[in-house]
Image (tube, rainbow, N blue to C red; front, side):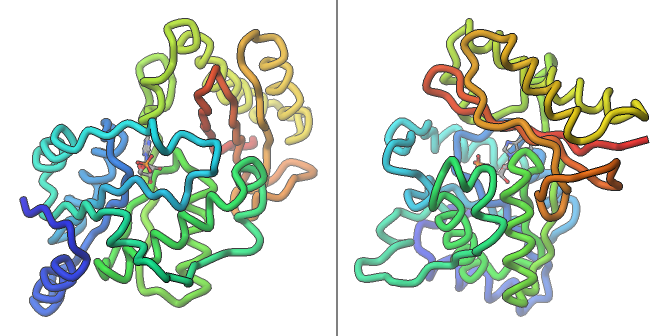
Amino acid sequence: MQVEVLPSAVRNVVHSHRCGGRRIGLVPTMGALHVGHVSLMDAARRNCDFVIASIFVNPLQFGPNEDLERYPRSLEKDLQKCEAAGVDLVFTPQASQMYAPGAESEVRLTGLTRMLEGRHRPSHFDGVTTVVAKLFNITLPDQAYFGQKDYQQQLIIRRMVSDLDWGVEIVTCPIVREDDGLALSSRNRYLSPADRERSLVLFRALSLAQELAETASETPDSIARQMRQLFSDTDGVDLDYAVVVDCKTLELLTGRPECAVALIAARLGKTRLIDNQILRFR
Ligand code: AMP
């Protein structure tokens, strides 16, 4: 497995593989890799000839009061996991290589990025779209792999690729969970034992949402209210939002839709968790 720090080095490698007609898959990550990340690498390995994983804690997507400094970093262990997953090349740039002094350009979407997560984390998605655009330009992937865990993010990346006519196929992989339902996240390690226990309310609320969606009398609004009630009944968890929205536009819904998604963001101590579930209405 090759490890490269410089964008120019990655560009050279990619050029030779593209000339050889190989299908390139990209898995963008911020490191602190877990089984969820590895599931994206496995999927890329199945579908592509040359798999690139990027590991970059992107400063641009962290707000001033967020956890950039304490975000977990474990490069050695991460590289071992990439190697075991059959990754061909790991791209681990420094921030100074990704954002040269004097850089002025960014990629910014104006609609989807302003809702839900965007309201609570202003400019977060501008950082995400800018870094993903740069990663696409450096690695020229045929396919790029994202997790459903960050539901709004993958929707935004799909929008960006479509708006800007990028020839990249976006593949969204299912959420990998702990046995008790907590979605794997690099931030779970921050949870105290008590908060880890409380964190299960997210999965309980999503399971409740799915159960209710199968009941004819329930609407997206009534489901969202019952999800929020579950949070009001749980001490020590501060809910940012729990909504049931259109799975493509993230707009609020009336009636019983064909495709809806329940989305939750909640804070436990200093740790903010997000999770979601696509709802099947019967
Ligand atoms: P991150 O390192 O948190 O930026 O995540 C990198 C990629 O892994 C993103 O596309 C995430 O959606 C995805 N991911 C994170 N956690 C999970 C999970 N539990 N299951 C599946 N994919 C995940």
